[in-house]
Image 1: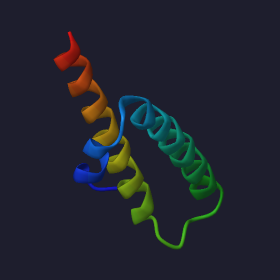
Image 2 (image 1 turned 45 degrees about the horizontal axis):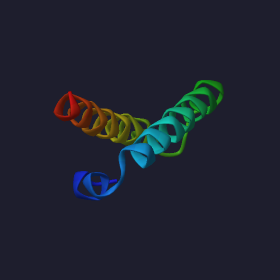
Image 3 (image 1 turned 90 degrees about the vertical axis):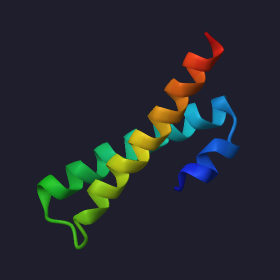
Image 4 (image 1 turned 180 degrees about the horizontal axis):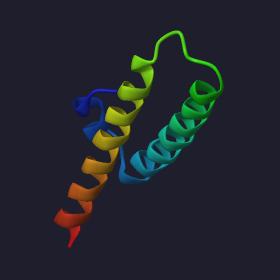
Length: 65
């Protein structure tokens, strides 16, 4: 998910997507610990998406304050 796509979302949508991304990352990490993934780079991509979502959510909170 690109930052331009994230900025178009509402704050509630970003919070929802962040929760979903964290759950997906934890599940993928668990699967990877049991048996290696075909594409372990997916873990890195998931972490970056989580960081982008969290950063945008935090910046909106700071602007609101």
